Image (cartoon, rainbow, N blue to C red; front, side, top):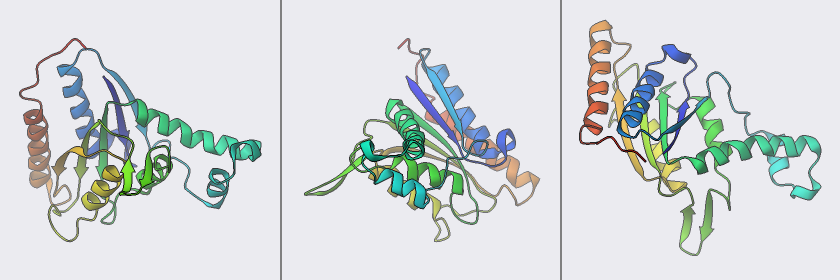
Length: 206
């Protein structure tokens, strides 16, 4: 099993979303002895933004690209290859100003490539990153689940689904800025949710 962990918080190891993503990965490793884990920390090493230079490089035919353009496209190629090789994605996602971190948006911009991770057909768009399990650990200062102010989950559902990833588990830790007692209870509940997801899993050898 190939696991790709995407951490998107700027707070590093102190991040609640990263801690929850780590807990999911630990459960996956416990349930399957043959695992390979890759961690991409977007807070520590942000992916380049999709600017005019990147767009020009992407829309220039490969034989006609400059060395600089080829290098820029290669950066996106590498993250696409990571996702393609993964059986499971585990994403740690804090809420910043009601949305996802800019670092995570840049990562989605990099992996969404027509003809590679999605395509347009007579029947509409088709995601090409199929057959993957996704776990999304969400950390919020307030309580936004199932409210109009939660723009994260609709966006993530749209992007993941557009790319073909529809088997998604959502893990919530909310109210983390509403006092120590509420925060501790929220993290405890999130960890219990993670444990429940794997309660019936049996250790495997492959």
